[in-house]
Image 1 (cartoon, rainbow, N blue to C red):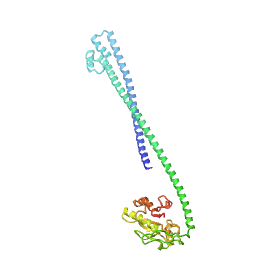
Image 2 (cartoon, rainbow, N blue to C red; image 1 turned 90 degrees about the horizontal axis):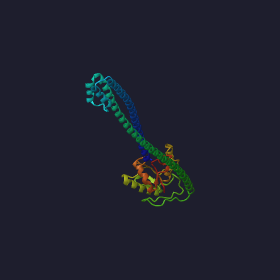
Image 3 (cartoon, rainbow, N blue to C red; image 1 turned 180 degrees about the vertical axis):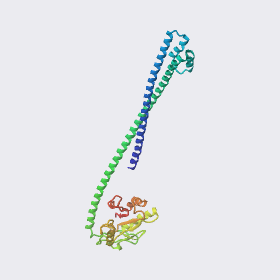
Image 4 (cartoon, rainbow, N blue to C red; image 1 turned 180 degrees about the horizontal axis):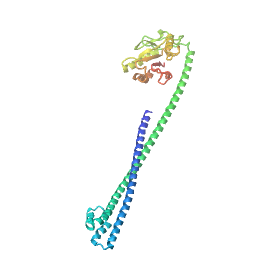
Length: 345
């Protein structure tokens, strides 16, 4: 889920960047087309002005011819009218020297109009090429932005699918917890039915061999039938729970350099009643706690907090020794108690 969210964030940034790039490319193409339009307008005006100037020069040449002007006066005019270039400075000087200032003014005006026409045509060509280039770039940016948005959308749909699967899994887990609770109720009923039968805990733990709990109730077990906990002076459990706890605590000590820290183990009925009075929101109903059967402990030393390395170690290793954190005590459970661990038997 975290990887999917990270990928979605990456694609979201990419899509946003691509869209911004497309916007900028589109604006640049629009600006280039606008400049090309302006250049085309200038070219049209230059062509019109050049034609007007050449026509005026032609009329003047015709008039000079009809009035009998000398050929040396007409030659520069013919050259000006037939020339394809307006950039020859020597040509301008020749006109000034041979036809006089008045007639040269009209000639130079025509030549200048032709020069402006040429320059404007070149500018129009450049802006047209730039507009074509930037329009193609904008189209490529659009394609890339669409691809980025498509990938981002697909990743969003994938994440939504994962979330849906997670919600389905959570619902299934809740159903399983309900089934487990029902099974536990049936098991508790059977325990009550078998209350008169022997509940002898077999096996030994050092000098402690346990005892028979027949006829004893929750919180009323004789301490002579319970065994001390390794590394936790003053604490007692039934023999099999104490033996499994020792193996677990020894493994913990190899990892952390000290035994498991214990704050509570077997509780008498009186101690359950006192705890219920002082901490009603935490304590179980007196006579129902697994502490009263000698198969539950409350731990400390870091295990008592969710998110610590010690608690994580317990979650990873406790089951190997038949110890577990009940569902109701887990993070997100009905009454989270990271310190409360029970022996399965």
